[in-house]
Structure formats: C-alpha cells, structure tokens
Image (cartoon, rainbow, N blue to C red; front, side, top):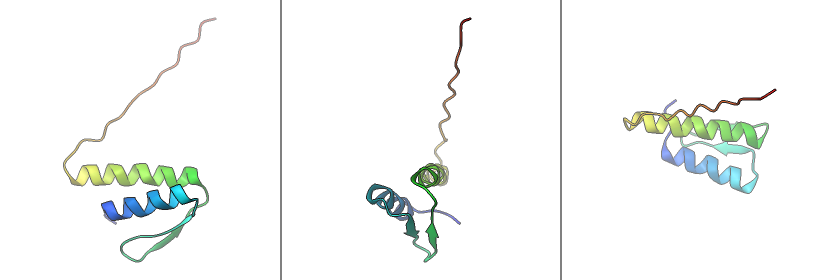
Length: 68
C-alpha cells in the first residue's frame, strides 16, 4: 500500500491523542499495541512518502566506545 500525507496526519493525530486505532484513507482500520509501534510505522510512512517524492532517506549511525 502506498501511504499518503493524509495517512501520516491521521497516524500523528492518533499518537498525539493516545488513540491506538487509525482509519487510513483507503478505509483500512489498524489497531496498534503501543505508541512505540505507532512511531515506528510513522517513520516508515515518512520514508515511503519521501521515496515517492524522489527524496533519499537519511540514515544516521551512532556508535559507542567504552574505555576500560
């Protein structure tokens, strides 16, 4: 399924209000287990929208170093 900016807005509104069910623009209803799961889907939708607009997805790598 290709996500739309409307789908992203619906998901963000649900996250902000604490609702765990979202009805997407194609009529599909999805119920999430947690806000963390919803935020992962939000990132995926943002990436899909960026890709469909020809933008490259940014990736950030973090590394940790311990002394000892």
